[in-house]
Picture 1 (cartoon, rainbow, N blue to C red):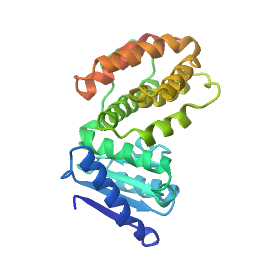
Picture 2: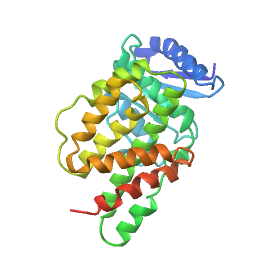
Picture 3: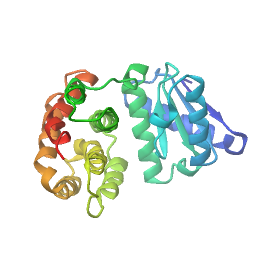
Picture 4: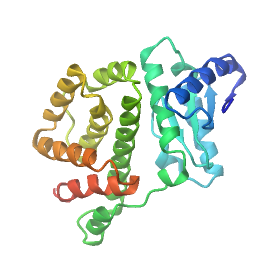
Length: 257
């Protein structure tokens, strides 16, 4: 088996079914020999605590790279690892399957540490040097843009290999929100969900949900459409170049107000 599970005793029973499911996904994605580790914990809190401790040992700033996701993929040890709690490991639940499918997509596409240790895109660095953005603002924006681009790549991969049903149901739920909060970070948080859903827009319901979510961005609606179009057109570029395409599109807006 190329998938190995490391589980706390209370959730050791989840190791085999999760490994089989991930192995099946890797086979569907044409990567049956791809190595992936699963680290399984009883709760989301325990998962996040263990991951933060692991990253501290690797001298990675865990506070910057461990968001409150239900499942999480990283490659800071030099190979792909998926961190998951027993709360999110119910393979009878579409949302658990969708999250795991998504993380396996990351394990296939973003299994090298270079996909996570990304510097500021040139367009944002220029704004910092010009005094139009603070370093902290630029770092936060760069992080959210990079998540959106990587999630777009993962969804494109899953769509290409026909892994759609759970993804479409998941994003229909994620996109069904109220008004977007004010501020650039709130808009970027919404944008990363829209970017992840975008490759599934052949489903009319998903397309309609994306259009509604984009329209909720108000004055940023046209900007969002430009970003989606340009990221899609940049599909043949490497990860850093695509992140720069998205960042450059947003740069003037980021520097305003």
